[in-house]
Image (tube, rainbow, N blue to C red; front, side, top):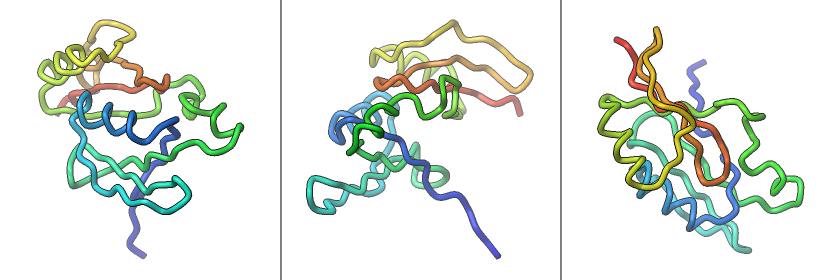
Length: 129
């Protein structure tokens, strides 16, 4: 059997605000944005055409709304790899992305934790080769 993990669902409050953040601040591309009826959309974004992607899901129930920004249980749970840490770090800062701490060097690479507009914690990482 050949398989791969295609999408990770990320709960958001509004599709268009989420698209603005992912396209402008993170430089992601929109792979799909299709109306499904009843205000629901199938919205998939990714750093590029290849690799992992996020399915942006508008929270529709009180339980889902309560989980926006908390899907990782307070831990970093999204990892954005880059081939040029300084370039992307500066780009994110110019777009108002909040970093929790200064960049640091770890055994696995250069890293800094940032928070998206919903409270999800991400690692920006330039892996050590």
